[in-house]
Length: 187
Image (tube, rainbow, N blue to C red; front, top):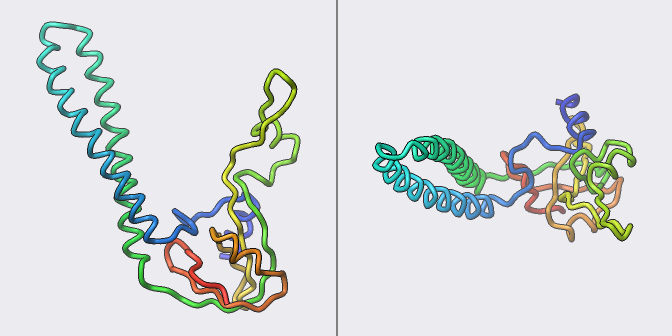
């Protein structure tokens, strides 16, 4: 586990799906995503039926029908992803565990932030014709690394107020959810 934590921290990613998100937020966002996916799936099925009637007469409609099948596959995958959010949110809604430890580090992390600045600037910073650049749009997450006595563990904390109150070396107790690692409380 220690090995896995170190390389995922180096990459700036977390292997936990939906890491740090509140379970209720996951349920709501997943339900909305599933509802929108179902809406588009119903529309696609109705349009596919219409295309099947027209395809007997028009050869172009057959090609368009194949495009609708691909569209339907993508919509079904988005539906499954939304339902997964709902299920994970429900499973993670109530159980909490407390983790005592010492704060090792607090940092802002972005995807691929381990790369050299030159590479990150080439990937993320964009300039316009006037020579001025506008800032990158990568989402920032706040990572708190805690030495628990049984090893070093990292959590994503979405609440900036909770993160600002922490200093390295401070003894804390985290109240976290088991699946997504939502940090409910820091004492």
